[in-house]
Amino acid sequence: MFSVIDIQIQESQKDIKEYQRSGIDTNKIKHQYLRSFVLLIVSEYEYLIERIFYLRASKCNDNQIVNYVKNQIDKKFRSPDLSKINKTLSLFDDTLKRDFFNKTNNLPMHSAWDNIMKARHYIVHKQGSLNLTYDELLKTYSVSKNIIVELINILGVSSNDLV
Image 1: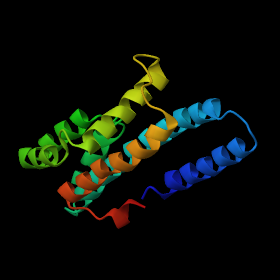
Image 2 (image 1 turned 135 degrees about the horizontal axis):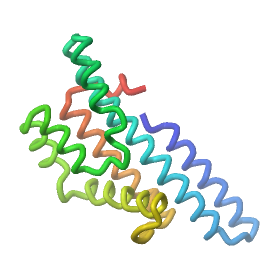
Image 3 (image 1 turned 90 degrees about the horizontal axis):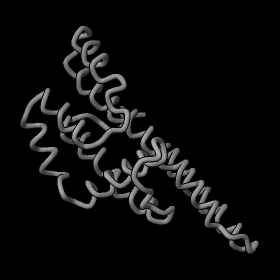
Image 4 (image 1 turned 180 degrees about the horizontal axis):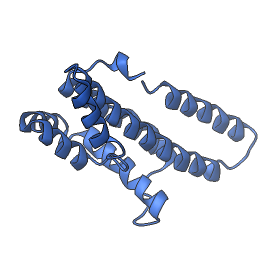
């Protein structure tokens, strides 16, 4: 599900080690990777969230309902903060929202997700500050993936269908 980003991160780590062995200062390189990966991660999360809701709607086997949900969800998660996910879940059922909120609120995955969204906001809009380094992003990204896993579990879809 996240393999493309994971592979690119692994490649960047190899590049950085090679630069370090060559005696090159990697701070600027890491900063460039950070900016690129934040945008790539958020873009992937936008796609996955929309896809998860679409897959959930598809379970009802009613093309009109599926099309309606797809049209409502399309582009809704540009800058997919957790409040948008919670609001959308509540439109389906308050129980879904409550369950998702209880499984994610004030946990490390919540903070990790918010940190990536704040970094994206800074990169795209130049508002706020970029309080995340490349090395922190690697850890933050790994933890933030759990938000997607919880959404998959709450909506009862298969991660195999996301590919």
